[in-house]
Every structure is written in C-alpha cells, then in structure tokens.
Image (cartoon, rainbow, N blue to C red; front, side, top):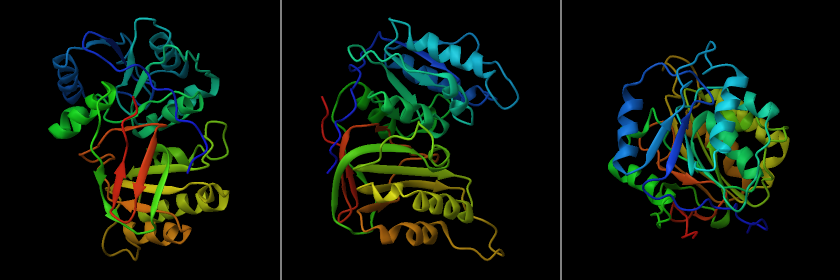
Length: 304
C-alpha cells in the first residue's frame, strides 16, 4: 500500500468551460481527425480554444521550444482555462520541461489531457501534486469507441468509471497510486528530476512501434536502475506494432514482458485496453487504484 497521498484533482469539468488546445510536442501533419475530435468536444458543450500557433513547425517539432513553452504557459496561466487538451504526441515535451516550473495553484488546478509523449508533462505535473488524464489527444479521440469517449468525459466530469479487464498474471492484489505512461518516454525520464517517487506506485505502461529487443533494453534499464523494486504493481496496456518480420530470430513482446517482469513478485495484469491502438481507455494520473492480478482487473474507485 502506498504511503503517499493522491494528487490534487482539478474541479470536475462542466459544459461551457474553456479548454485550450496546444501542441507541446510533435508537429501536426493531418487535420482531418483533429477537426472531427474537435466536434466531439464541442458536442459535449465545451468552448474549445485552439492556439493560433498550433500549425507552427520546427522540423519534427510543433515550433521551437520557446514557442511550445509559451503555448503551455499561456493556457496554464489563463484564469478562465479549466483544462488543457494536447493536440498530439510525437516528441518534444521533455525539451520544454528543461526550463519549466508549474505555477502550482492548489486551490484552482487544471486538467491536462494527453498520452504518449505527453507522459513527461503528466508525470511532471504529478510531481507538482496535481492530477491529469492519460487519454486520447485531438488526433486520436475520434477513433475511439463510444464507451472510451464516454469514459474520458466521465473522468473529467467527476463520474465513476468502470474497471478495466485484462489478462491475469497472478500475484495477488495491490493498492497504490496509479501512474500511467508510455514506456519509451518514461524510460528517458530515469535519472532526471522529472521521474516521480515510485514507492508504492502502480505503473501502467504502454508502447508502440518498438521491437521486442528495444522493449527488453528499456525494461532492463528499469531493472538496473533499481526503481522497479519500489513499485507495488504493473498494469500493461497495448504494445502495438511492436512485431518484427517472422524470418528474424526474436522473442515475442509477450515473452519479453514476462521474462523481464515476472520475477518481480508483484501483481501484474497485461492486455488492458489503453495505449496507442484503439481503444485507449482514459486513466487518471496520481489517484489511488487497485490492481487485482488474480482476476485481471484494474479498478479506480470514486475519487470525488
């Protein structure tokens, strides 16, 4: 059981709230899915404000570090803003964290919504004791099934959410602070001030387009760093498009995950429906959760 308190939850969202959309990571290349996702937010009654610089590009980044940092600061410091929607992942959020301090306002915190590269921002925000949502971005929300879209709004609007069902690896039941994120991004936070204290944490990890040997290398780094000995449970989401051509001798993703994690003697549940492939079930960051590895369930009790 974690000895750490849950993160501060921003107030539940309600129709009419202002939600800026920013691009803190990779450059936007296609706007079809973006526009359709925008309509979903509007249909739920929200005032969605798109940054006038969202189409900026600096190579593979959505503008220079200063430009992307300014987008985040403008939204975060806007007293009317109730939550921030990230346009997409890619790469770049760690770069803007080199010169960034969250102006913590525990009386009036705001939601931050995203996944993939946004992991770095979510974990940094958690270090400031504020919860965010690991969930669909503007380029992916429209591809989610209806139940997944409903789940995102249920979390943001303060309603109870259903448990997620995966495959049990056994190992009992763990209760701790839920910390969801992308494995590759999280691995690159090891040894930095952005990495949260993982004592008593349930890690929820996913990844995409990383072949098995790279997943092996990353998990081995986690093992050698000693931090995996601190966590109380591991929830594994999708590891999509991680296969290699069949003629190459290789371990499967499942084999690598089991080889690197099964001897930790903690509850582990795999194949939970979150990650880069739809469905990407939204998960609140920094709240108490229970991982039942006997039944293969990740449960998040009501947190308001």
